[in-house]
Structure formats: structure tokens, C-alpha cells
Length: 162
Image (cartoon, rainbow, N blue to C red; front, side, top):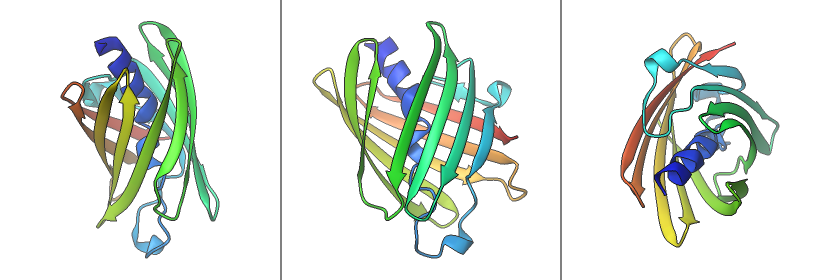
């Protein structure tokens, strides 16, 4: 179960930024688009992959996250999308022969994007909150994650803009 939750965490780390450009006051929010590379030396916690590349794109209505990451089980890839209107977005991911639906809801807390994720994993509800911040110079993206069920855990991921 721990490996499944760790793998699902790795798949959903990118999901947290899915509604990154909410339409209200978009000019005051940081730009999350571009290609980001995990800085493993400045990352720690549950489910942190060995390496990860995250590519974020968006248009007027949709933001897309393409992710490739290394795990002890080999390379994993995911593609996640979200509407930019702030409504909950359903994403379906498969791993280890299991398909899981994730519901994501995002909102801004000042310059921080807060994303709440819920999913049913092996009969248990996963609750995850991600707080995304971008450095003042726009070169570093930070993700602080708290998972409250089915296992409690935290992770702090740092990415650098390519």
C-alpha cells in the first residue's frame, strides 16, 4: 500500500498545478508554464522521485501537465489536464494495474496556488493538499504537499525552470 500511495503521490504532484492560471486577477499570479526539472538535493519527503521533468502548458481554458519521473520501478509518465475556471477537475491515472480517478480543486491564496486532491485508493479516501509557490525571479518552483489519508505524509519538492 505504501508503494502504491508513493507512486500515486508522484503521479499527482503535477496535478496540483493544474488550475494554475485561475481567471480572476491572473496578472497578479506567478507564471507556472514552461519546463521544470526536479532539484533532488532540495527536495525531501514521502514519494519523492529520483528525477522528474515537468512541462506545464496552458491556453485560455485549459492547463496541461506532462510529467516524466524516475522511480525504483522504472520511468513513469503522466499527462494531466484541468479547466482554468476553478471547478473540480476529474483525471484518471493508471499504475500497477490499478486505475484511479482524482478530483482536483484549485484556488489562489495570494501568490500561492492551493490544490486539494481527493481520490479513492483501494477503498480508502486519499486527501492531499499542495501549495505551489514560485520564487521572485521566476526560476524556482516549490511544491509543499500534505497527505492526510490513507497514510499521513509530507513532501517538499523544488523545481528549477529550464
